[in-house]
Image 1 (spheres, one colour):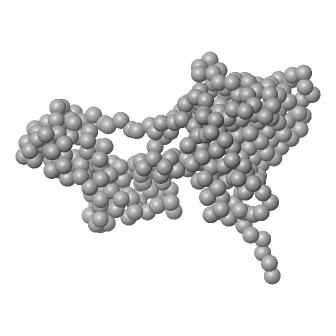
Image 2: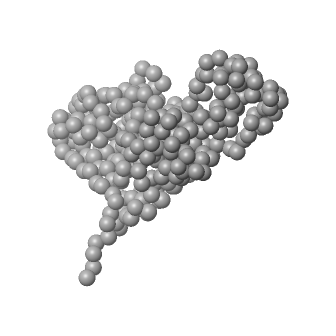
Image 3: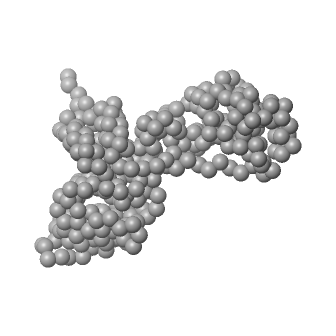
Amino acid sequence: MSTTAPDVRHVVESSGDDLDVARAVFESAYGASGFLPERTERSFGYRFRSVGDDALSLDAKRFDGRMLGEVDATSHYFVSWVSDGGGLVDLGRDEVALAPGRPVVFPSERPFRFDLADVRQNVVQFDRRTLERVAAELHGTEPAPLVFDHAAVPRRDAVRSWNAELRDAAQLVLGSTPLSPLAMAEATRRTALAMLRTFPHVTVVPAVPAVPGARGRVRAAIEWMHARADTPITTTDVAEHVGLSIRGLQQGFQRQVRMSPNAMLRGIRFDRVRAELRYHSVGETTVAEVARKWGFAHAGRFSSAYAKRFGELPSETLRARR
């Protein structure tokens, strides 16, 4: 008895010659509204096909007409290119021409307007958290939002590498063989790495929160604690960094912020644990894994102290992510 292997991909397809249906299809595909389709000299018709899973999808579309609108791409990261037709993205701001031969990353930190006509267009769509995790792995940082310079022209050799990696991914993702979760995840990871190596970007590092009363060397010490919280630094290390004795550092902290350097560092690490638990979903990590990563080895004491600081258990924080 044979069984059909499970396939993690979902496929969305639509085609036709109705302007209103086309508008609804593309609004739904990119989570937008207010698209304005118009006819051009070509006989109108459209086709849309998307294949992938929640982390990565490869979209192909034909649109023989003009489409204007606004996209809020802040839930995903997009790379797009056309083989025919074109237009402009980010109208009225950092306008970029979408033309054959040049892949473009869409603005990801804010909505943007576009005006395209008679296009054969492809789009690679990444779930935000997926790409941010791969970026963290690549750069050796914590997952954080990415900002791509969509107006920057990528190097030719980088585009060649991107095209080669994408061809390999497309053969797998668009092929007829069912894809297991592991195979799809590996294709997603390789494509994500290629995107990150091709298109200029920066990681948005959260600003160090101001601590009332902190100034001078105490403030510098707190900033250094934030920057090194994921390393095994001690009060001695902090004192040496800001040029104080341990006693001088302790006195400065008590005088300015009413707590010890150790308590400050511990609080920073608790905040990092909370941020990471809120970022992940149940099944992606465990409270114990995150706690150990940030230096909390005793599960019972950690949970109790966490609940005292945040008013909920760490398991509740993890389950609450949407």
